[in-house]
Image 1 (tube, rainbow, N blue to C red):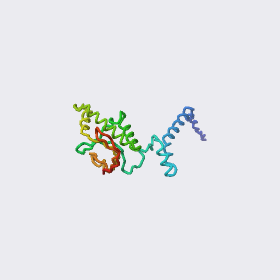
Image 2: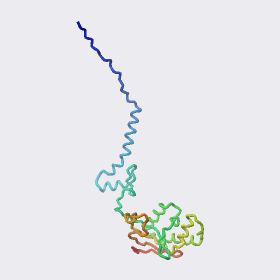
Image 3: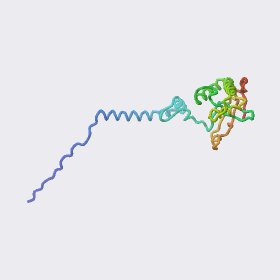
Length: 204
């Protein structure tokens, strides 16, 4: 007579780890972080007009919608700026400190704003007066960057405030940047040591 013994396996211990309040806070933090990362996508919801208006209203990290990065420039840009002209007709980019003590970007914005508001002649006068004062002071000797820049600018006889149109493909086509823009309009001119006048002259 055979006696059958049934073998029953022992129950497995419960290995599930209970969820703690700390885990819930961590999960909430991850969800909030993901929400911050995805929030800029709201600018792309709506009609094309609404999208453009929302995109350019403010920058949105990490998907930048700031116009400097997101605007379709169609391969071109228009820049108001100042150039110096020598007696030989050479164009020289004048140092931004002739206009003010701010950085190059700050001065660039101030010049662009001034041109838009019709103050091109005042800008030309300010640059020309600064060049004239620098010429009187001399300080052309030496090998420092400042002395080299002053020697180059000493040849400038006239200051032009211009509004230039650059084509990216042409401007960056070679390693050397071309000296002239695609199109340019002179808004004001001033002989160094003279008085500025407001003009409207297409040059190219």
